[in-house]
Image (cartoon, rainbow over all chains, first blue to last red; front, side, top):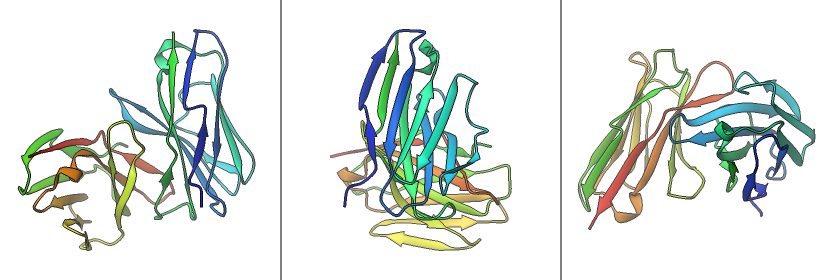
Length: 114
Length: 109
């Protein structure tokens, strides 16, 4: 069974451009999490969904960030416009239950904003 | 609120033991431990749900002191494969995990 799939794996863009990161959770998992990892701040939770519904987006840094989950097998994280300080590794994770269950992480997308 | 991990980094020789601590200023419902190797995604190690609970996985075990709002991860007779960054995640009454900044562990031959 495939794990969590993320695309692209690497993204280099210029400041001001729109960036869209994609995630396909493990089939049957109904909880999905977006994280951002930097050296300074560590692993931060941005937003999580349960049954395709956003439950908590308090970790989303600014209005420039938005996330959607149109169906159980797909989610996007969009940054518009992107800024150099958005450079980080973005992980998507899924779980079979929102609470107290193992989260399976995707390989991550390394974003560089010039 | 982000839990605090200590130490930030540790270097061991193969076969030595190590302890990584995780503490929170908020009441904890659960504690999760993950390990991340360089350039890879975090991988689940274990979850502790009850105060006083202890778990083990091979030679890696953990304890959870609910009253003290802290957890410790014990690595016994470390192996080269244990190298990586260890994260604790604190679960409160909600659903989300707040991860600490991680403890970098290097096991040398």
